[in-house]
Length: 358
Image (cartoon, rainbow, N blue to C red; front, side, top):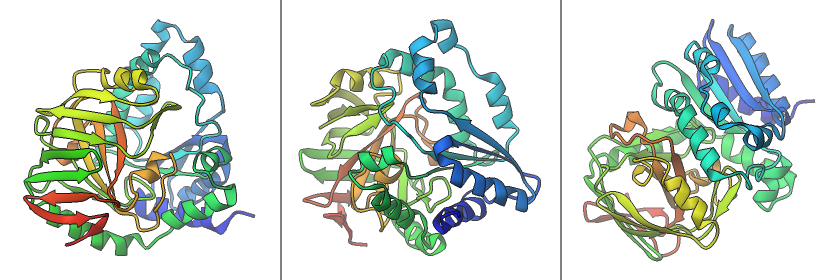
């Protein structure tokens, strides 16, 4: 018997997030671990008159690829996959890792190279909502529960609590805050070992209410590329391709990260920031506000929505925010402001210790 919460998640994805319509071609991508959710999505897509295509990944395939692929293979663009995506109306990607550290010992240069090669696919999925409606979501697994330091049962309760909400009601609150921030020109972030300023253009903030990500729960913008100045110490570890980087500190001058240190995997951090010309610039400033996400879990899809937090993404800026920063990298890192933190817009404190004042 299917967990009714899985069915509800599938219904939200189909009817709210990507809004599947009759004759839509829909790609659903996830690991075999997410079978229950994938089959529910498959059923609902057919009932809506769509055409589902399941892309099911197996454990260890990424490791085998990066361990054995030649440079020629790493540089080969997956044109057939891209052609299919360009003919697709909807795309649902499911995070369902069985081993979150699978690529921990892979040379970061290989990961960076492959990221550059496949970047046109990421760019298309993220930046062309008029051509493809896409959403990222999660199916709880033992590996993800372990990273979050919960039992699987506890983690399932946490995940579905954050996912199954009244998104239309939340959207009203998120859009109100978005509209207030869209009046600002300069943002200042203050916190532990943090004093950072950035400029934003009017009406550049976007609210995610479960459309692009499920769970949703953030408002974000792309700052003016050369406006970021100051320093920030990120509260939580950043995990990318199975590599955990801890206690990250970054300094910025005229938009560029001129110094980046970490207690663990500092070399990996800087290797990622040296991916290309745009990867040391900030492509996204986001504010987390999902009321059901109150703790850090090492899963970015949830952590960037943690209420009372902000995040900065090194690299690519989303085109919908109106600010260009081209990069194969897009790496969000989270700062908790619930203790001695402030967000200041044009000289006015709008959030203090994680609580909104507007």
